Length: 436
Ligand code: ACO
Image (cartoon, rainbow, N blue to C red; front, top):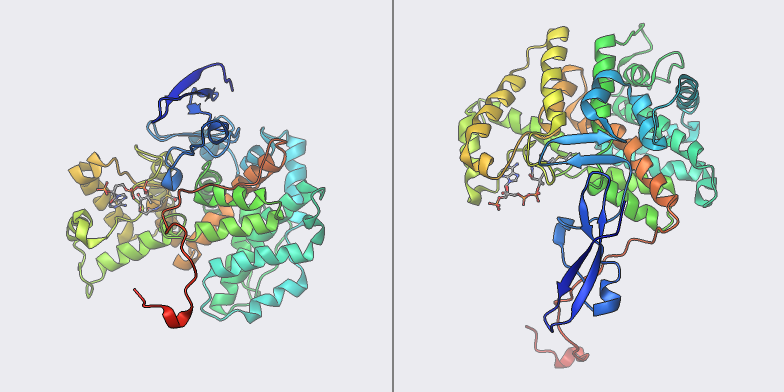
């Protein structure tokens, strides 16, 4: 990272201000405005942060124009094919691929911390049966801080809390599912790998033996790797912002989970399946006619979006969607599942990619377009899709939180604003007010 170059800004009153230019390791350029307000009185205005770099970061590189995604320099395609979720998590959190001994130790710790306190297990009983699992997950992650109060101490053993969160979120996710279907919860089995153990807690029952299917275990590993980080997105920025106040890591991650929940972010995988089901419904407004739906999306007045399409950063095919599309074929084939939703999704993609509306706006399938179809095929219910996304994103959030708290130049996040309300006016007693 260099700051040798500069740029000149001429203000409305003719004053000139010199801005240092920061250049990243992939030649990305940023105007450094840190001294701008002090020197000129001006701030910048950038709703939705479309042009604002909130931080420098060495974790993930993303080039939306070229469709490139790399974790710590490693292409997502290589990691999805060759790595495991646990190894990729280590890479994100610690900055390099682990040796065999480091990986074994990290896996051992994840296994060791997989149980949740018995007191917390009773919390599940208090939630209504129809609770959305994202509500349960976020509340439970916040509650973990009550069981590990040393996390409130800035000098707390960071790696221990990081391992606890990664391991326990998996247990909480599975327990919250068991609660919704009224089955007894299944305790983790230490002999199983991270993803196999998750499948065991989700799908095993005490009455019979359960052996996770290795193809499904691999698919879950790949799905979680693809979701593991995506630089400064809405939820990750939330984790950083909450963490910047000094709030503990459980609070920061719980805030990330809540930010992820929205349908424009991680909630889109659930919204995609609901959209496909609505189009396919013979008694619904589209009766299987996906072209009618796409025409409605193109009509500005309808306010309808093709869920799973478009991205703030990708203006090319999302590399994760490409991997997921191929995976969907492979996994459904292995499981002998014939899902008409996959055929419809592919048909809609084909229509959209030839349509000027989508082409001109550079709208391509994103990570959520095919992930829901995969989750359905392996038995994950629709309401759990965003929980799966959260499970995958945990190491990314933890890596960003760790990078932030270890940075000595870190400051509390506090944007400014341009005020557009009334200028000063004086209090009028209620009996003298005219309204309006
Ligand atoms: N369907 C139809 N039109 C769309 C879509 C879509 N999915 N996405 C964007 N557009 C249109 C907008 O109407 C807008 O058109 P206009 O310029 O004529 O007004 C233009 O494309 C730009 O859209 P914005 O909403 O301004 O783009 P932004 O970068 O703010 O939004 C977002 C990105 C939120 C992802 C958007 O594409 C969207 O809503 N997609 C559907 C939801 C979704 O799949 N979200 C998951 C994203 S991936 C993730 O978070 C993991």
